[in-house]
Image 1 (spheres, one colour):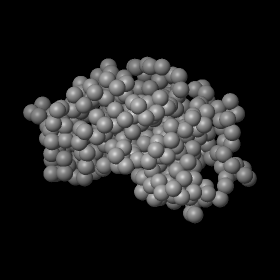
Image 2 (cartoon, rainbow, N blue to C red; image 1 turned 30 degrees about the horizontal axis):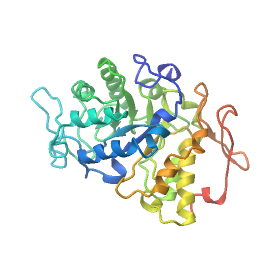
Image 3 (cartoon, rainbow, N blue to C red; image 1 turned 60 degrees about the vertical axis):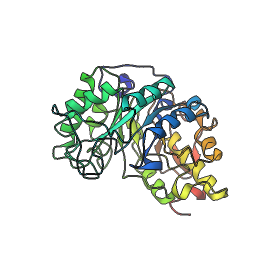
Length: 338
């Protein structure tokens, strides 16, 4: 069961089970840069996060998203004669291994990305379907500590694909957190039972957008599903939009409240805290929210399930009193509109 397997896929690897939710804090390139990134942004993120309080607050992973492969945005994924993927040398001129080593040298872990299907979400192909062995072993050889597997263009049942990935990641013998992005988990009342058995985290909703109504939509996807969140296993309502889009810091009370509420609600629900800020533009106020020590008091008892939404009057979220220090009341701000 997920509660016994710690921070890895399957049951083959173990690691510390201290502050469960803290070990699922990350910085990802997608929100700030989409596919317009290069190695410099990773070097800078590692340097800045090691000194600006984010690492001390528990942010542990620095992740890439789509567009790292050779041939990105040309319609092709370049693979060698044995089918192993190659990285984009224009984006990583000093080598992706060197970049990952630098991330590790600063005390962080590195998260990688791929698609489960025959081509990537932007149409580049061939992607990972049929190449699970090559991709898992290449990512592990580069030094990946996490792999996010998206769900574009898959032609096989999700359980088949996720089983392949779980087995291949375990076969690398490297502890790798396995993130399932949209690959067939959701049912009307919960999740397919194999989701928590095969992966460490699974997306609960559509891709989030930096608008309050979208944030509330993704939050609602967790309703009634708190019991599925356990140590080593997370319901994932997608990235944090703190400091992004409509939540870009402008000094107004409304934007400040939205950013604080968004971050607090993701913490209360034991969701992965995946920031996506541009360190060249981020206001200190945004970093202060992401590293808020008062929110860090919601550090979960590792033997309890995640809090869940409730229909009780005056209460939107509740959990075991040992695990949830206080109930989050429902002020007007937490409605779906303004």
